[in-house]
Image 1 (cartoon, rainbow, N blue to C red):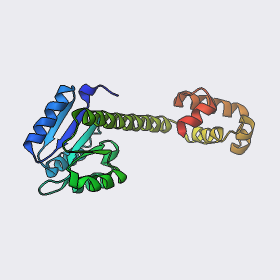
Image 2 (image 1 turned 90 degrees about the vertical axis):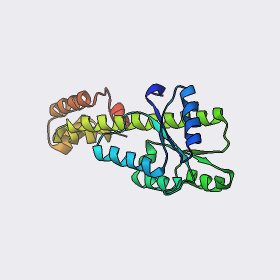
Image 3 (image 1 turned 30 degrees about the horizontal axis):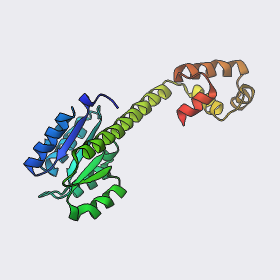
Length: 210
């Protein structure tokens, strides 16, 4: 995973003692945390970040209490799912025994996991680390997608045409026939596509686009 020093665990719980205990536990494992006393406060932070247009840069996850005054943890989770936030910010619910069936249902709807109170410190930290790793993989995938889009934007229209046919597995002669250009021109465009996409073979190119 990316350095734990730049990963953040958001703690959303209306109980001050729980927030402080969780923050202390995470500090003891060299994990940074931010605490929020309500779902509304955390929702405001997400809204402000979205409005700023700044992308998520570091792995993070949420320790979210199910029952809170005002907006519940479940309502916050629903909002996050609707916006697609949970792909990069996995949610671990903190739940009492009576809420376990509800927590199980949220896992089926995309929550990362739930931990029943009172929870094992080691078990909770293990789940937090797993959630942060999932967030890190999501960020890497997003960055790779952005790099791919940047590379594709550098191709000319003709290079796009040649690339599409190369990926389909056509030899240069058939590509030349379909595009009504010379084989030599196909070879030049093919070489430029490989160079711009930073690949060395048609197989590598196909895998990259896939």
